[in-house]
View 1 (cartoon, rainbow, N blue to C red):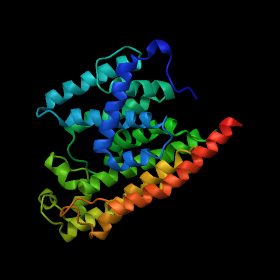
View 2 (view 1 turned 180 degrees about the vertical axis):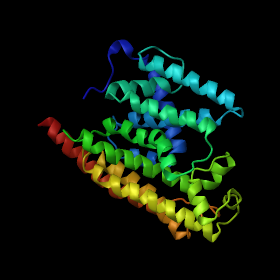
View 3 (view 1 turned 45 degrees about the vertical axis):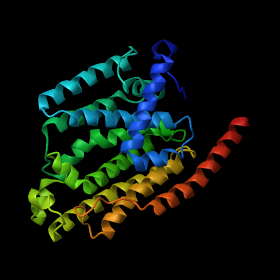
Amino acid sequence: MRTSPPPSSVPSSATLTAAYERCRRLHARYGRSYYLATLLLPAWKRPHVHALYGFARYADEIVDSFSMSGDRSRALERLASRLTAALGGEPVRDPVLPAFAHTVRAFGIDHADVAAFLASMRADLTVRRYATYDDLLGYMEGSAAAIGTMMLPVLEPLPGEDERAREPARQLGLGFQLTNFVRDVREDLARGRIYLPLADLDKFGVTPADLAAPRATPAVRDLVALNCERARDHYRRAWEGIALLAPSSRPCIRAAYELYGGILDEITAAGHDVLARRATVPRGRRLAIFTRNLLAARAAAQAERRVGVA
């Protein structure tokens, strides 16, 4: 697999290094569970995962950083224009795009996935509610499933398993994002958004005011429990995909799987009350997950080195 684009399209080393570092910092700040898991990857893969996550967060911040929707729309379109130029090999003045474009070109990441992600970012400018779970899935197809499939070439499916690994990668992205939506109900409402489907709110008799309360009512708890089970179903569908990845990538994804699943465990342990406090995986459990998978990561790295020498 080629790990760098043609020399004519490579930004200056200083620009590229700075962009990858910016992406790493964005990942470390906003994606702590997944960032912890990426420490289990071989060192050469980590910057590319940071670039993909960093770009997604960067675009999301643009969508949320302006008070006027017109300003947000113009900012997003300027980003899309710079991205088109960067993917075409043109130098761009941007703190993140040189790294993202470099990774996309290096791994042959499907531009359709990039376009799907941007379409979901545009939806965030105008859509504040989703009527049904199918409607929400349509949004998450770009905002989450596409991120999973963009990550896939970096994580290296086993030879001949690219197509079979794609659906589990989609499902893992969906599971991660739905977990975030369930956990962050209060934060999203403060931004004027309700991601949990309105049909579910109606089913349990939940109003937006109930989601702003200091504690969850029994109806809100039932609403959260339903969507926790949906997230777990996405994780179940994703599980088989871990074995389809290169051995050195499996500990990272297994750890991320366990860490995000741990968020659901904490929500369940709190009686599905996501309003009283934000669910987080205890430090001790996070450390145990990391340590257990670190041993597997080291063994896989050693095995790959032996194969390389042979």
